[in-house]
Amino acid sequence: MANTPTDLQILNLIFEHHFQDYLRSPHNDPVRQHKNYVPVDVDYIANILGLDQVLLVSRLMDHLDKKYRYQVEENSYVFLFSTAFGRGSDQDRHVVNFPYLSSIVAGMRDEDRKYRIATGMAGVSLAISVISFLISVMAR
Image (cartoon, rainbow, N blue to C red; front, side, top):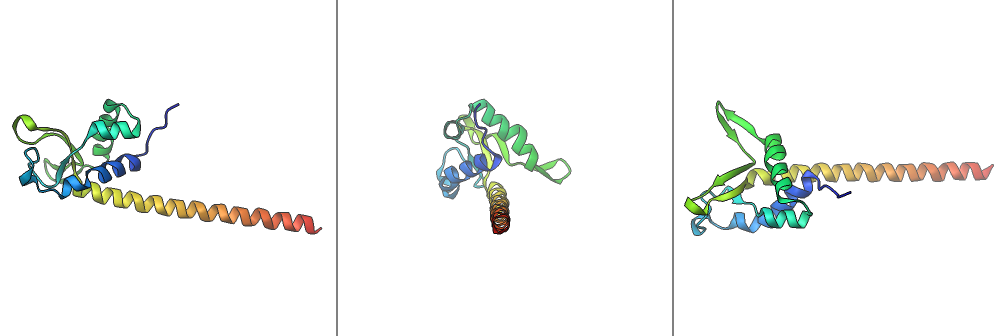
């Protein structure tokens, strides 16, 4: 059975891989039309995660974008992922709203850290309880 990457693993890899792309000015890039939207290298991300490209795009567009999309006013939405954004024949097939991605990744990393700390503390508490129990049983 193949391991399926978590949402955090997918978004974190996109963030790390494309951070320098975001910093580059769109005025010097023939494809990018807007600084906030960065093309996603689907081939690279899918390869690193060991996923099929179609499955990755489906996760990005059908799950993650719908999960994080929000409405700002009637018929106006902020999307995490979008398609066909760019100039002429150099259109990007898939782009990410990078500042929004950054916020989402920061929140997910914080939640993951809290979860790991709580789980670690529970493990230590369990170990202390088991050791205390064994000491009390052996003392009799």
